Length: 67
Ligand code: SF4
Image 1 (tube, rainbow, N blue to C red):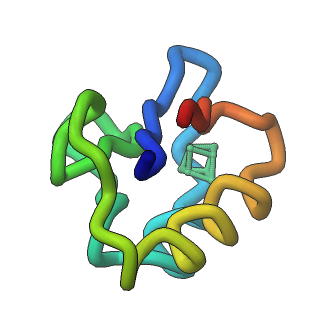
Image 2: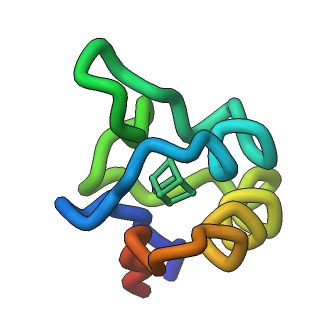
Image 3: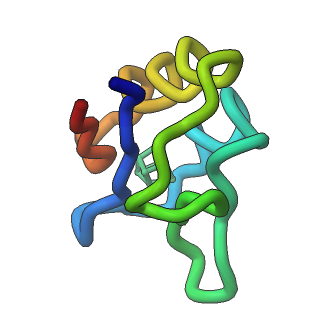
């Protein structure tokens, strides 16, 4: 099953995830990251590695990955 990526409230808005995987993560008007495909959306396979890399690059481990 494909993975889902959810940005938690511990996001500090550093922008790392959106730099690594802009297809999925974007800083919103509140200055925190959001998954523009949707927290409950299974990420397309071709974006999964990049989204996982973005999650791994988060300095505060704010991106929750579920399978
Ligand atoms: S890398 Fe982590 S702290 Fe930085 S914007 Fe993304 S979710 Fe927020």
